[in-house]
Image (cartoon, rainbow, N blue to C red):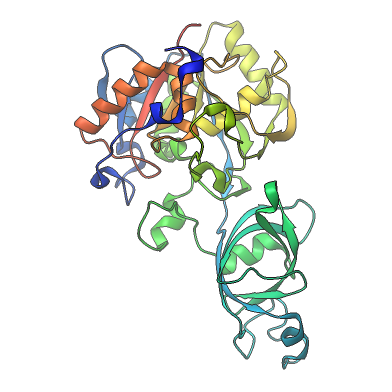
Length: 375
């Protein structure tokens, strides 16, 4: 099948709903691992990963940290907000605590997509019966008021909000874990811990880099003992990762943009690994996207920037040799990415095997280990 014959429907498959994991495995590294490097798949447990790598190989992780990005609130009109009864200074005002009266407008659910660096401003997806207007306010969690500045983002599909104080602090205090739409329960205390990697460092993601959720401290220690190196990139995963592809022709799809950073230390670690004959193993598609985006000019270049890279069959990989990844949604851009990496026929065969063997799918599900197909 040539590149020009691929359509979105080629990446569809039937998935029994009972295989969509609603909760993580009891232990992170006790998840199943489908070893898909060879033509014949091998069923393993994730904690076997160190035995599948060689001394000198390099695991690259995404160290982004999931923020409590989901908020619930009610709208204030500008006039109602200006004339409402305010408590004394420092009590319940603009993020300092609960206000004495409920906002009287319609209900709002917000998902914070991005906190703008060095500001009190955020970009947010918002669901409401009527879109809030510029100059209006939203009271979130009966705790703080955010001003609506206008529309923003690609196609003006998001809302530009100004928070009264540090957005990260307010989200941590009043937000909810932004569990994916296919997880049917409301976020619970355990999700705060398990929908986060053990090495999460840089806050800003609204979805977890899920392949890395399988790593625990004991597994990381075994990898180090094995002589496998580690390095990190940062890519703040956006809500666009869950958006369906609504066109049939791949060339017609407009990819969402995400911010990423590859440090000079990581570039140097990759150079040393390759020079010594080791394999660069990306943990998750977000790590792969960051590394391959940073190498689009032919050489891996350190720095921070945006990427809207759309990886489909025929893509030339320059950095990553192996990929640890979870199972992805049908007809998604990530199905296209893994098919580009390991080969379309190989991926579809692995997915058929995973379904037959009742692997657990998506964010809280099991994982695969893939080898890059030769050009």
